[in-house]
View (tube, rainbow, N blue to C red):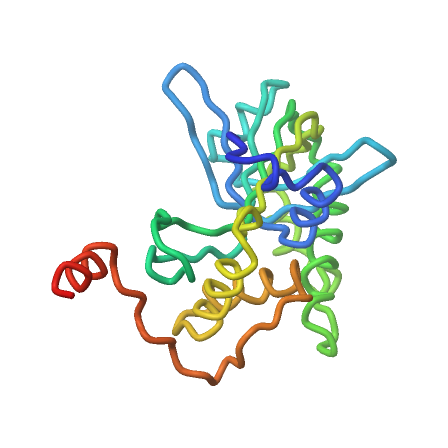
Length: 234
C-alpha cells in the first residue's frame, strides 16, 4: 500500500484492530497465470506482537492450492466518500476520496481437515455475537451428516501476518475550517458511506464546532473565474 501522507498512516495496532473488527475482506494470491482473489470473512488473532488470520475457501477455489507458504494479501476496507472541490471553505483544493483501508500480507498455509470444525465454531462465534440479543446459532445444532459434508467441502487457510499497512485518509492535513466544512457536508449526504465518513471525521477532531446535520448547505463558494469576472466588472 502506498501511504499518501504520514498523517494518514494508521499504525500497526490501529490497523489490526480495524481489520479484526471488520472481519471481511479481499484475499488474493497469484501463480504463473496471474492473481486470484476472493471476498472472504476471517478471524484475526493476536499473541503479543504476532498476528494470524484464518479463513476458509471451497475446496475448488484456486486459493486452496496456492496456500503452500507463498505470500497472500488480505485487503480490508470500510466506508468511503467522494469529496467535491467546492465543498471546502477555501478555494483551489483537489476533489478526492476519503476512506479507511488496511493491507495485511504474509505466508499462508492450508490446515488439515481436523482444523475445520474449530475454525467454523470460531468464525460463527465472532459474527453471531454481533447479532445480540439474538441467541447465537452454532454448528452443533446442524444435522450431523450435513454438517460433516459441509466441513468436508472447505479448506481452512492460516496466514501469518508479517506486514501491516493501514491508511486512514480523512483529510487530517487540512485546516480546521476546511476539515469542518467537508465533515458538515458529508454528514448531510444521502448515502450511508458519506455519513459514516463524516462521523469518523468528527470523532477524530471532536473539538471543532460542527454544524447540525439538519442545517442546509451553505451557499456555493464562487469559483476563481467568477470572482475574477466580478472584479473586472467593478
